[in-house]
Length: 528
Ligand code: ADP
Image: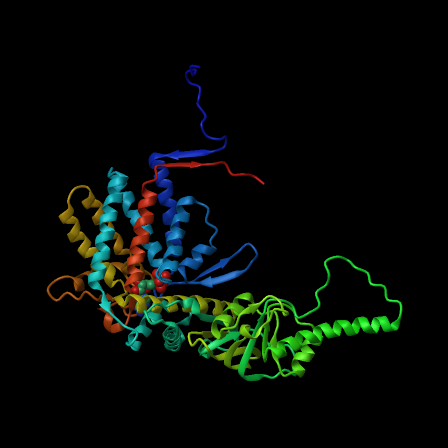
């Protein structure tokens, strides 16, 4: 049937919205840049913190890019793509999240200028891609080798990673703890799984009271005061079932007609509970960690038998104990067998501040280590945990890749200069895009100096002049405390190569993806 002229053909569901062409690009660029702008002021050692309050009133105070973005309730689809960069950066290297996001924001800002000059988005995308590949090559050529043997240098990576995050005051001490923990878990082929390092937060004391334990720490007390506090040569049983008589699911009535019956009923129950303890004793266990509840009577019998026990231990903790001691988690007491027992040299309840915790030390698996983080308030400990998380990952990455670059904007300035040279060899319209990419790199030193209250133009001019000419110093970066351009290698401001290469890859890919969109079709919001 012929369509009557002038009548619209509706191909989208009612309520859907559609934005096309330059409007769509404009909106996407604006939203994505707004997100990048939000974290910009946190970059660098002098970056500020953000206080995020969720709908329930819970407060998070942080300087960590990925945490800020995760907590923000972002709706715009293009803005969400920027958040993804931070998440990927965090997954891949654990640090450099703000850098990646700020870079993406600047790449998009520069592309707006090109779009205004009628450079087609696919040309910009192509140029950006070429520039990103070249940038990774240049970074590789700017990198230096490092091994775990050079402990002094490795510590510096953790200090750079933790800058700006409350932990600086005791940076040396934390750096030491982080390097020691990574050393303990690195395997023969040089791989590091930081999940092997158990991080335990305990509010109280000061950050400086944080310590490294060679073993596992669980935030539980022994359940009965008569249980031993210390068990040497521990034989550990792990239970994923209650040490109680489980209530039947069906309501049942038992009619008791005489006192004897009642007594025998109670005796029966007591025997069942006693049998549980007997079973544990029979297989030779002297320590029990139970994921569920433990009956009072069982507690009493366990204590009488000199067995140390803890209840309601987290499943994740049970798994860690299992890995460290070679124990197997049993799902029923009846099935508990000698082979399920794990061993450790020492299980002990000790006090951390005012609270008791159970330490499982001298484990079969020497890779089991725990970091106990202390701090005055919950917010301090939480931010400390994030800083330590970054630091551990960074050491892990450096140990795996064995390559590092210097920070303080040194790499970015060098990239800006070299990419500009490269652009002139490419020619064509892509040249414009590569030049824009090169200029975008300067956002890092510029933001570092802005956040430090320095004049960004002076700082950039001074940096550029150090990087150019006959006596060029490729490692010159901004000393954010004095504003001078100094050798970052000497200053010890160092970062793993992977932090920078991943930031450039993530930022350029996201920018390209956002740029190539020229049509946004949004379904209507489902109500209710
Ligand atoms: P990110 O989330 O990207 O790691 P940070 O807030 O940790 O963000 O800031 C990292 C930036 O700060 C890097 O460019 C790094 O080189 C720079 N930086 C860290 N410490 C110093 C320092 N002492 N002097 C100058 N720049 C520093």
